[in-house]
Length: 41
Image 1 (cartoon, rainbow, N blue to C red):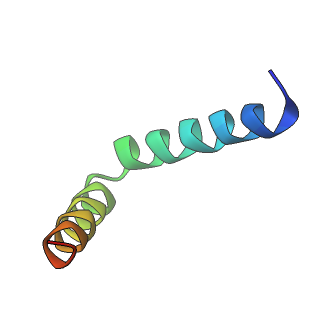
Image 2 (image 1 turned 90 degrees about the vertical axis):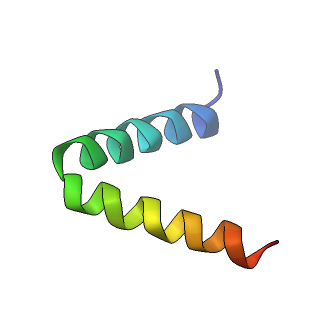
């Protein structure tokens, strides 16, 4: 695994941990992503 893909993997692990630790943040991200999908239709 090259350095870039390892860095990306670590980044996603940190984001996942943050979303699990902060449920309000998780809900805000979910709403944001749902709004983005609606505007792309």
